[in-house]
Length: 236
Image (cartoon, rainbow, N blue to C red; front, side, top):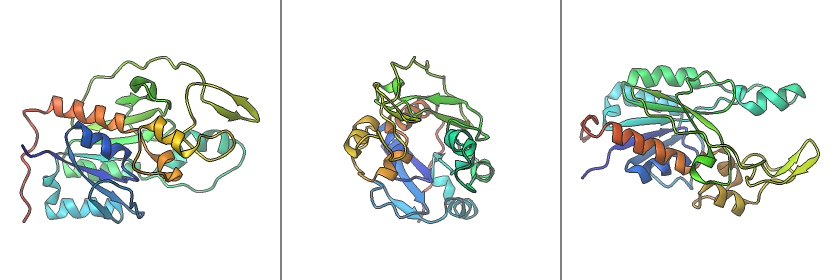
């Protein structure tokens, strides 16, 4: 049986895409940066330009669903918290709103993913590494367009994130999957904690979501849409 096809916008190294693949999708990625470690077919270019082209050409109907992780560093917790309070950082990109406009025009079920912070998305779903037995907390929020899924229970955290906070060292069951300063995990530790083994690039690991998140969402979608997935059109 032919697998439904997912469009993975702003795909980075494929944390989300790998999860969707494990759930039962075939995956096409789009990213403006060169991503040689991305494990699926990928288009290098501007994600919104590519999405607009797919809509205009009608090729968007090849896909059953779209996942998008648009940049929104201006509203992330680190930017609005420590960085801004100390006068660090500069101008950041926020592509959430234009991404949503195009996704709604596409008319397909979609997911927009963002970290905790002030990004203007509906928090229809929040996932945490503790829900999947991972050694990262990695809270991520998801806006779901055109479909819904039940919210899983947010389990209590078992302790702190290991590493330094304002000069003081803490121990705990989780690693800090961001940055590269003092007390941060090694690349192999990050790989194990995130469940990612196909890239050893720290920047890609710290930007990724754990594949377990994409797998959970993909399985929820396929379960909800078993009898109503769009018929995929053959493209010559």
